[in-house]
Length: 123
Image (cartoon, rainbow, N blue to C red; front, side):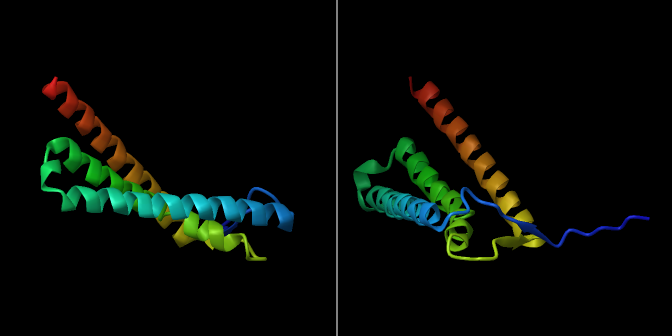
């Protein structure tokens, strides 16, 4: 009987050299810091302006919210691993990331389908 149980995964990442990891950390953090406030700004603008009450802007605000959620699944762990010497993730955390990545990705796809259908009906 072979009863091997996986307890954690070793994340190899993009590069093993510290200099390249710091460059990648800078770029990923920059993108992360642009995406989050940008989507929050979209949501606040749509909520603050009463003229933006059409279904298109309702869908856009929900898409921005889903994008915020989607971007908060894997980048925090990845950014933390750029400074960690032991780049591992436990099995349960990996499965949780995988679940939310697929769940939010599917929700975003369905929202985009609803947005396309709304535009089709409007035309």
